[in-house]
Image (cartoon, rainbow, N blue to C red; front, top):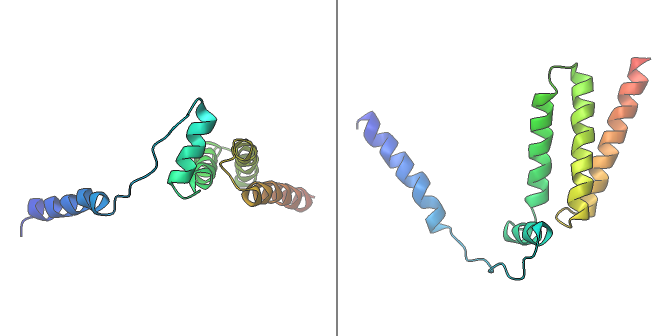
Length: 118
């Protein structure tokens, strides 16, 4: 088998897999703003939309803040992730447990860095 044929078979499998596992979702109705759209999207992805946003925000902010020391970058990206978690919780796309967890993680990391710096 040639390399092109192998790549073609792999791409065909990757492109056809979502069609096989496709599900039908409710149609978005009465969407008058971003909050309604985000809540509908959250229902479609089994209430994982807010968690995905938090993970993306954490990793992107950590890469952007990597120019600073690791402790400062980690604290800064946890703080920004905490702010986004509170916003997602206010939009009702993130569970209260995840929001409280992000606040506690940011606070504990800040206290740990403060205590270790002395």
